[in-house]
Image (cartoon, rainbow, N blue to C red; front, side):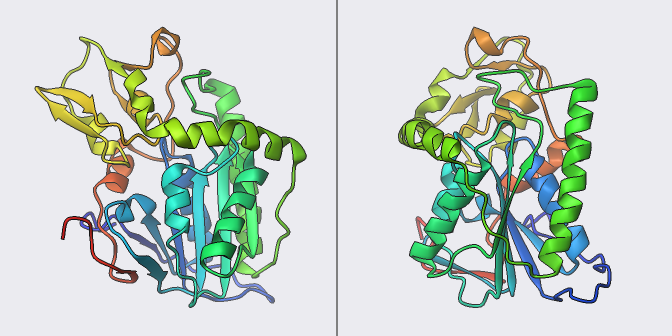
Length: 302
């Protein structure tokens, strides 16, 4: 891992297969508590010769993003049956002229994956003149702590074990260059139509619900791990600047559970994907675009 750019190259040789397609690959990811990054890492290890790049690396740049890879993947969670705001904005900027195969993996704790994949497919068709060749929804432990506690113990372990099996199968289909029809759920489309527009219109200001208690130790983990760069430490305490993605990473990753979003989150189970560390979350947030993923346009403030 190169800490300067937050880009990881997974060089594990992909297993040989009669119909497998050997391609240089890149997977872009957005994550709040690690599920989508863990999924990206598992698939990358199976594909071989794959770069893993945080979507957050492009948050302060403008212009098109041109991956230097034949196979391009996007991994992110599902929010209100749609894409995280940052992931949707990123997809609108992708130039996929060099890509031969485009796929997505969305992770979710309670459905909505089909609607999110179809949203991404529509964005790419509109902006990049091509859609997804394959899309997959993977169930993993949910982390939307504003509504519910994350699963723990055996329930969490069962979900993660099932996700690992799904990801192994998904990686095989991607290696083979399989074209996969996107899942379709009328219920997910209806939920997205009702809930997602409200989410997108209000998400950046949702951090007004967040508070920090006297338990805060001024460690700065919340600020360092925020993929939106939305938190700064002022007088040793976090201040939110209303550019929130509602990933809830700051709540989940606080080592002393000092951050809340009202009384409902007090005492609720926190979550971080057990395959990842807080340092992995921080690496996502402090990165710059990599030279192999060119941005054709000036950076903001330049």
